Image (cartoon, rainbow, N blue to C red):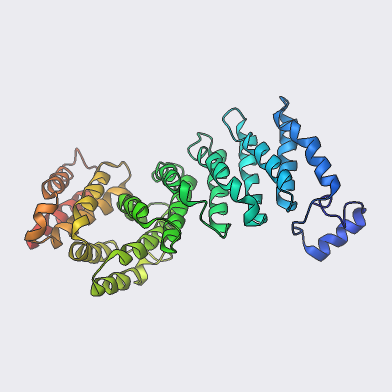
Length: 368
C-alpha cells in the first residue's frame, strides 16, 4: 500500500511509521505509481503458475493492488480478471477463498470504473455459494454481501437478482449455521433493495411470496444468530407485503403487527400471539395467497428439526381458526388436516410437545 502511493513509494521505514500515524493503518486508495504498475505486470503471470506459493503471493498482491490503486482502468481489468481465474474449482480451496475475499476491494473504486465488472464478479461469487468447502462458501457469501450492500448504484445487481435468490435459497436450510445466516442476510438485503425501488416489483413479488413461509419458520431457528437474521428478513418482507395490501385499514393493521416488540430481532418471538394475529390478517387482507402460504407451511411438517416443525404445526392451526366458509374453496384444508392428524401418531412425531400442539391446532377447526 505504500508502494502504490507517489508520496511514499521511495521513503524509508521511518516515513512509513509516520504515514501510519497520519492516515491510520489503512491508507486511502490513490492513483497507482509507475512502480505499482510494474509490480502488477510482474506478478500477474504468477496467477497461473503451477507452484502454490507463487499463486498465493500473486493473489495477495492483487488484493493489495485492488484495494489501494484506483483510477487506472487497465490495471483494474487485469487484476479482476486474474482473481476471477482463481475462483474456479481447479484452484485449491484456501487460495480460492483468498481470491473471493479480495473482490471486496472493488468497492474502493468509483462505481463508474467497476460497473463493467459487477456481473462477472457476482457470477464468480455465486458459483461458490454451495461449495463443499465451508471457508470457500463463507468467503463467497461475505464478499457478495459486502459488494451488494456497498455499491451505490444497484442497477447492475438487478440482472443477477434471480440467480442470487436461486443460490441463496439452496442454503436456507443448510446444516452449516454460517451459511444459513449468510443466505438469509443476502436474501433480506435483496428484499430491502426491492423496498427501496431498485428491483422489478413483479419479479420480486413472486420470489418473495415463494420464500415467505421458509423465512417465517426460521424465526424459530434453534440458533440465535440465524433466528435474528431470519426475523430481520421477515420484517423486510413485511414492508413489501404491506405495500401490496390495497386496503388502507389493512396496511395500518399489518404495520402495527410488524412493529410489536416481540417481532423485533433482539426479542423472543411469542409464537402463539404472532401466528394468531398474522393468520387473521393474512386471511382477511390477502385471501388470494392463503392457499399458497398454507401449502408451503405444511411442507415443513416433514423437516427433521423440531424448531421448524413446531411453528409449522402452530401456524396451520391458526389458519384453520381464521378461515371462513368462503375461504374453504381456496384453501387446501384437507391436506392441512391430514398432515396434523399424522403428527398425533408417536410413531410419526417423536416430540410430545409437537404432538400436543398438533392436537390443539386440529381443535382450532371448531371455530371455523
